[in-house]
Length: 246
Image 1: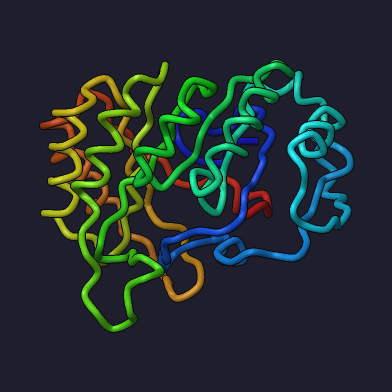
Image 2: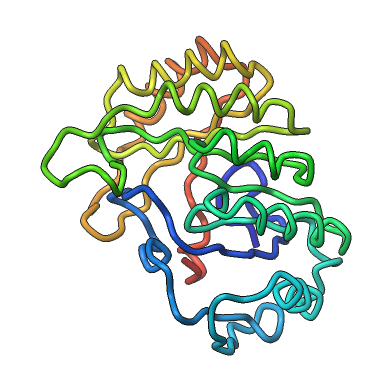
């Protein structure tokens, strides 16, 4: 089940690709940052019963696992991570195969790898991209203790290509460290580059070193500011931690 964004609550089958080149303070799946020797495949839909297999998993085997989980009965199939666009050819092959099984394909991405997006874009129905804020996110290649470089220019270039998808969702995680100028810059760019996109302000789910989320007054104020630039702004928290699925 989708646990965040405008499609929250809809039946969704998830295919998670490993490795990520960002380090988000609030990441709920840091085990995907680096290559892993093994991965888990759910055996029966909704049971939480998994089997462990060796990595890498072949595309055909991943699609067979999705078929066994009744992919055709899901509204969406989500390619997530880690960062799926670090493996664009594999992501494209998975997207093609998942579409053939029946569900709409949703690409969940950190929204920085514009050239890789071109490989996958023809095979997905929704691009759900993050808009990272340097107040909480750094690149894995940046030494710790140095000020993170902003992501705005790369996100804007990515969004300019992503808007060719049937539907675009931009997710911005808001923490107590998020600054007005960062959120304002993101909203202005979304309104300018992709005026039909949905901008989701997602209050952070406390995890790891992040211990609290911003309050209602702060979130409503940021939403009001964003609505000056973007027509469709929504404040939507994550729901999957409520039923124990991170």
